[in-house]
Amino acid sequence: MKELGAYLKDVRKSHGVSIEEASEDLNLSALELENMESGNTKAFKDIYHLRHLLQDYAKYLGLNKEDVTEEFNDFLFEHTSKISLQDILEAKKMKEEDEKKKVISPYTIEHKRKINYAPIVLTLMIFLFILLIVIIVIKEINKEPIRTSELKGSVESEYTY
Image (cartoon, rainbow, N blue to C red; front, side, top):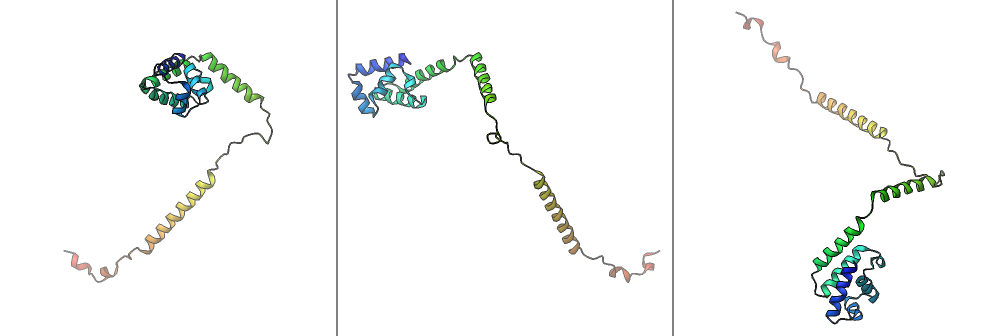
């Protein structure tokens, strides 16, 4: 980041622009621009905000903002990829130890809420049972009676040889 900041500072000076003039044009404080040019990323709370400021500054200086963004992303990758696996494991272990040291009382314990599915399943089964009974009753009501009256007048001899 220091190389990128130095490059931005050189370009600004080659254009004959003072830091005060640039800060006024960009609506930034001179301190923010000085921190960008010196590569002090810790002065910015949000690294993404810093990326946008760098893009605006590059555009202001007439530079290709994609190239500046790519250089900044390379810095971020290089800076964040240097965390060793050992450091990650130690941080995890420390977190677990901190969890063990917490004071446990009935008032500070976080209870996980369990969902009781029994009433839901029972209600669903009762609903299906009632629906089945209603369907059976409706079928019985709409059932056509057996037509035996048409068969009473037939003579058995008509069908014999």
